[in-house]
Length: 270
Length: 291
Image 1 (cartoon, rainbow over the protein chains, first blue to last red):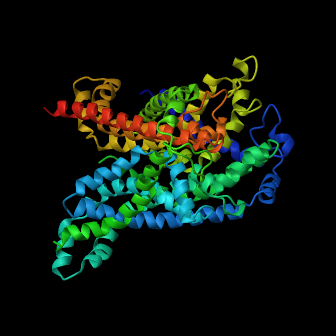
Image 2 (image 1 turned 60 degrees about the vertical axis):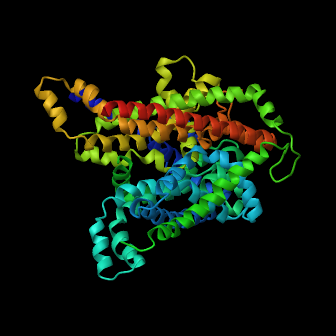
Image 3 (image 1 turned 180 degrees about the vertical axis):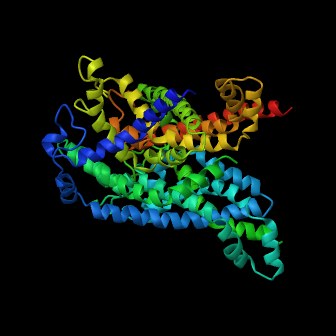
């Protein structure tokens, strides 16, 4: 690759990935006349916070945020626990039926989540969980756990079996070994599946839009999807909504994204 | 090492298996049941009608339009994303500060909710949007990116690919770095060009990763609902209605739950056939290589 093509390609990549974020952020700080001005201004002539004020006045942003955090955190805790135990059983304790169980888990991908929307709705009705945030937690664990079990495999391979055997010889019980020996070494893997789960739940839309009825219990994507259709198209407000939907995960990603990218690649390529 | 190893294994697996049984096995069984009764609104009952729902679905033009759209959608997304992911991974292959930074941050479109991506692109592709402004010197009038079924489909594929190609790029990049650099260096000594080393060394060695991505990526993209629904509601004139959108519409807008269940069953079967064919041909190729 010549230097010129390289520089040009990097420029195009930056443009493709980051320009949309730049543009939505700038638009969210523009006054209503300026946001629809043509030709568009690359930089707000007059900075304003009125779009954000309107966002907070016309939507229940803080409730949505709280709901999204609640389901994302609880789902992450459950998925990490279940997936760690299950992958330990499958990949570490060689037992009859292990391969079959693994295939069963892989097989769950044949049923895309949208197909489960209708019947799972009925199950939630039966369980009395419709309109409860727990319905989303129950559903999201199902979508994230099988992939997490598979991701964990590569990390488990890095735990030396001798370490566990040594601990067992010293008289440590199973749970002691798991918690004190295995889990600490698995930390990068746990971080990876935790971030994967968190982001998947944070961005989930179809189930959150069907299982929750009350305005106050909506998640961020569903609550803010309302502003797309609800009002006369107010691009300033939409831009502010887009920015505030992306912001929490972008901040989070700035701190822990590194572990995710490293871990995902370690897990994905084995 | 542990006594009662099998018992322990099942004890550890039990929570997840029970969870998946309740949320997948029971619903799938229920889906099968629903596909045989004439039920309208979710939560109501109906009577057993044998294969009527399947006949309804297979007799409707909308279902076959959705099937065609799904094929177009999956192939379009697959080609665009794999091509972009491979090119970007190749671009960022060398370990420099800039490349390490980009490897982390290009994944940004994937971490934001689809709803946010929809807002961003609807705003940019608007008649008075920045994209039309940039295209002004080349076009007579603003381009309507969602006006005609084909253009709407291509636009939607582009936006969805924008969200997912970075994740694939990062995975391909990681796979590329596991390939020993000596292989390319040896080829350079033998007089190969840069392009040739990528075409004849790296690409073939990346096949296993591209293969897994092809399988998972197809299942994932066949399943996409939110971006399409929020961008186009499946329109114009059904041009972007893929099977998930069709199923959603039947169930929650047209209140024909039985038909939606039958269509879901048909889609699961189609995906199952795809997975089996994919594994068969893929395994064949892998085995052929080893012998």
